[in-house]
Image (tube, rainbow, N blue to C red; front, side, top):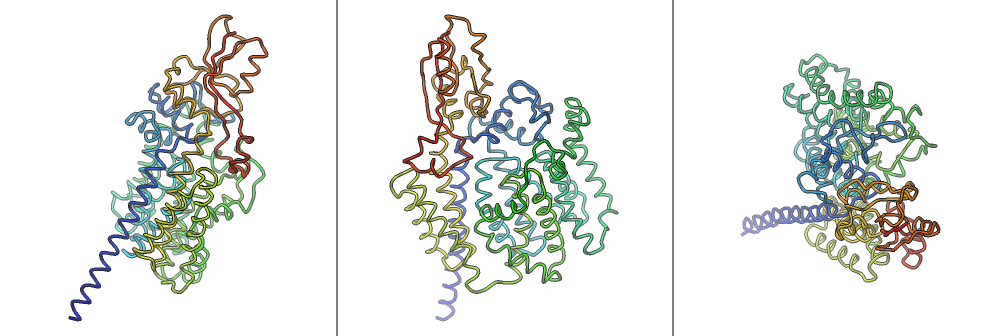
Length: 544
């Protein structure tokens, strides 16, 4: 009888683990699917998609063009090509849709989550597999990055894939993982530049310096991998040289683009905030940022418990924090490159220190409180009745019923539920205030895109207008207008009014309120004062 009860308990525990995994998988799929369906945000994601479509039309994949002209930002080729290639390939297969523009980057991002678990298990054994994936993949920043795709979506994932393969190569000395590691590293450099190479070099070099072990330099596979990396980069370097020459092309990519932000050579520069890294980590790595100080201190106090992981992760993390802090140009998503290394350190602390007591519940309880407050806020801002709050609360109740005593499971559930509300209810309503995408789709639905032109758009990013119209919308000038002809133009209401003052007939076909959706303010989020914070854009029929 005792044996039957014990066997029944073990069966229930196994079932509970299966149900918990299935529940998290369903939440994650819901988050990813809802995020893919959100419209492309200006500037970055819409720019990648628009240039990807243009790349498909021109067939030119190495020498980049934007709106028919040489791609540049402040006189330089601002970004490497991988993110544009990803958008071009996705839209070639799935068409000019949100899914087509995002799918390749999202798949690579998900592969990065899978790879971090394999990397952690190579270092710490099988118990580290799923905790590493939770710490790395179930956080606010990852959810945003898989919805609003950036170059960092590819960068962080490819560095994680390269790190996993390099760990296998270090252990076995085999050629195959060496070649894969350097190939992934080359792709990461095509996503963000030499920062990727320096990131993994800091990790592997940190271990070599701590242990005074430089044997990997003597392996033929190391030099073979370097050769593969160079061959993958060569077409891009040659294309840069042909378009831009050495100084503005090749040197900019190899040095100025990344390291010039520290020296001040990069044209993108402003007064840096030295606390930038830390206050952006506070929100972007929720809920697990609560555990990061303990993991860092534990790694510093117990380096002998796993010297390889500590030396790699600590060295890379500290050097990246210093580099980002002294950079002359900083954006919140730049901190994402820290995730693989802080996820590994938290996993080491979680597996080896085996933390007990109330401290480990802080992360999921804090995320639960923030998620509830956020859901209430979404209801107030957009919906007017408690749809988001009820959805979130019901989901957390199910999570608690399944495995409420597991802090890792509850933290992941609370985070995924918050992202589900964000991607499913918040962003779709917000994107109705991005005129370039909404009016681009409206023009396509009304068969106006073949004759559509744009005017007075110098202060507005309109990459989404090109993408959803499925063509590069040309500029229109009132000076070149022929009297009596009719023109269909995209413009701000202010610009349309100025055309009327010139004596032109301007008929409104469609207007809508518009804001920069990546720069939200409390007055805009307040339904009572929202409309006053918006400008107005529209599509107009103009007759000179």
